[in-house]
Image (cartoon, rainbow, N blue to C red; front, side, top):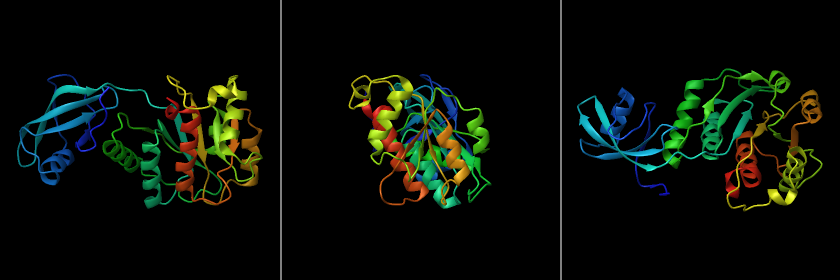
Length: 266
């Protein structure tokens, strides 16, 4: 399978991608291609839509404010990424932008805001979140963009949780201080696997349904922590001796999960 060309410009589109397909760009896309990148008719770009892989496309027609693309050939087949739900207490705008971008880069399949008792920002611009996820996917060679879900209260999320998906949450008071050891031991118990099966690298390993929950800046309150610990599907991990900001903790936790149960093991 060809590797991603990091020098190539990429664009996310909603339309199906097949050989010879013609796609009309939105005003924003046309401005980006023609005014920002200064591309012209005949120039090429890479396209992806999260379903049909990555395609080499040609600018077939370009005007002052319009642009039409033609899909030429597929250069990468669609690949299944890690099955990771990323749940987080919303942050203020600039830090939320960063968190969303990094979660997309780390392979999160779904972004699920949860409202806790100490959540700072409860009003979310979901369109902005999706735009940030798309930008991260375009820049980092991803073939899919994570789904963006409506925010829900943490209590409601826990009530109807799918128990087949372990929920990893960060807890500075976790009993096992080594997060890799805690993850491997807990996931082996919950999935019925041997701990050795969760050691990486594992050629051909499949990713497991899993979720990561990052709390608010002030942490979960006592009742929320007790509720999380009481659930049979949760895994508490420590992120070490230093207190991290929520956006930093997100990257650290997603890296750990990818190393143990995600596509870093392949």
